[in-house]
Length: 358
Image 1: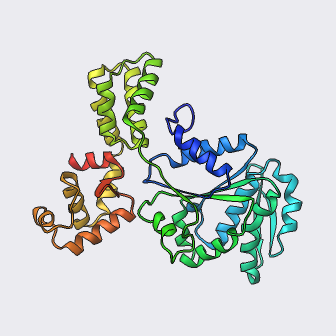
Image 2: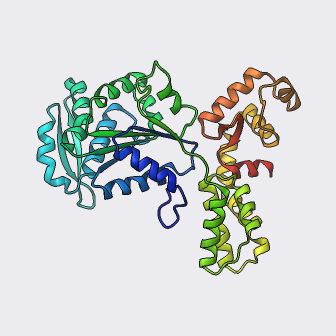
Image 3: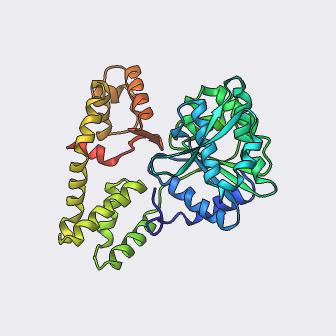
């Protein structure tokens, strides 16, 4: 996550999302990984809090069971309320099927967990998920579910239906469903047979414009006395394939080299080389965990990345059968190595692609 002063652009997106949420609209926010969704939504959350709106942020990736979902969500709710210790009695009064328990951590600081009555699991679920609505009263609350596609790990579509059945009745709370698996989350909200069909306004977060990168990187470099011309910045953006996280990561490496005394002509290529070298052990492990067909498919995609299921593509790169390539790409998409965008398969990490090229 990137925060001020390194948070770049997203002015229009911030205004749009803040306005929609303040107007009680549910939002479906999705994009590939590393596009800055969390940084953006945290900026929006800050704007909402300035308007007196309580914001709860919960990362569903942390939950690996129904019970852990309830416990972690409950903790997120309490942490979002100023002076939560003072409202513990009120919260406890709203829960009949579970009991809040305050424990002390190893540093002597209090934390809260839930003691469930296993015979009343459905009631426990409803009570906890209903807490934001009951605590909001007449005020406006916003709940952000990050990595929402991970809900499928919690008893699949049955969990989706149970969650939707509760929150659809909330009047004073609206929701943001965020997802990084672009090929999965939209299906959860656009298919009629899914519980969250048509739940909110879809927002697809795109890349930051080249012009905005040039303005921002130039300003930051010049503010520290480092000359870095426009042509170099354009090359930097291209090397990072304009993926926001990697553009900022590469720019920071260039800056580190510059203040270390390197000359401008060597900065960019040297920064890329060192970045890839620093990641080489991780990339090697990632590569070795792939099947031979998956490795060969990636080698082919380094060269060309469209019409990958055509006979010509498969024959040219000696990939065997179309069904085999489809299976390989499905795994690579699910593992976050590839993404599908504008009818092309692209690497989520552009420097892993450079590592493969060698």
